Image (tube, rainbow, N blue to C red):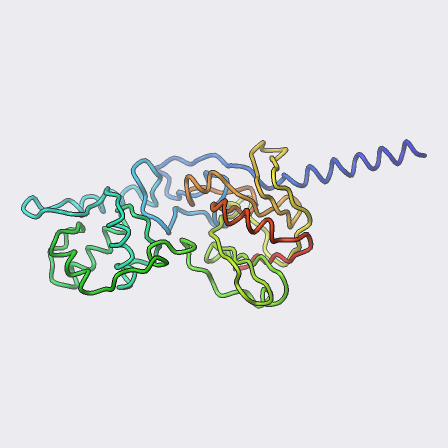
Length: 290
């Protein structure tokens, strides 16, 4: 009888461990020419897509190869006008430019310091509206006009706490201790009694392995965990639905939204997640919603 109990207990532990890794791990990268630059890394939106939050640096997948090509072509500087910022450049001055363009409602994404297709399009729009040569690059005349049309960006405007704008909390997040996770804005808000304590960007599972939506609770935590199925690290894992967990993803930090998980909610800011891991207790609520 005692031997039978030991066998049953062993099977139960093995089942729990298997469930703890069923949903996480990187998926194969799609070719850069794919029409959907989505499932390719360990974490992305439920319907993965190329990152809407940053300009793409050379070598990174872009939402559309043809769109990037046309944007680069439109940014070609006029040979008679000296460009001080243009497509492909990276600097703190460009971060300021992007923050000012966001003030002017010409950019919706957070400043990155890299001048890519989104910045090119925003500058071109500004130039067209202000009677300037619509090159998509910034010359002295364009820069002075942008400066006079906007104010000096604050530190938070230059480096906001999240790249994505945090969505309005779901009503189910307004009481108690909750990790409030919006698939629409791709953000996680740690909330206590209706007050937002911290926020961070997140990615989700792919279309084939979606992150489950609903109200859950943190079942258990593991600071250092590796998926037993996909053999990928899952630091600061907080499991809330079978094998699905909130955890840090080095791939998300490196490649942004050009990928997908097998169902987990991935965070790219390790420092913020480390603090959240310490604050969250087993039993705390998790709400995943659109």
